[in-house]
Image (cartoon, rainbow, N blue to C red):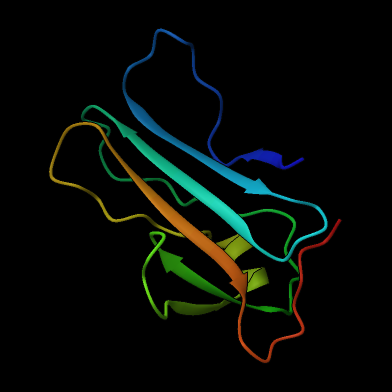
Length: 111
């Protein structure tokens, strides 16, 4: 039941370089799962501009499934500036981010 937002432009299937970003969002939930993939020697990552957030809401952005804490960011900032994944040394790699409302925040995902 999740909606998938493409955070990078679609590329031809045979393309094996560049960055791919996806945001999985359940319309009735306040949490998103963001996947960022690097294919080959892609260079610096583009900003991954998230979608469907409350502009004035505060969100906790955690890297990985088990990371405690995370970084608090405003919804408008994540939609305009995006998040920048860490640039790995080389080769194919993937990163996962969990986005949820910050504790005490009234921000929620827009439908």
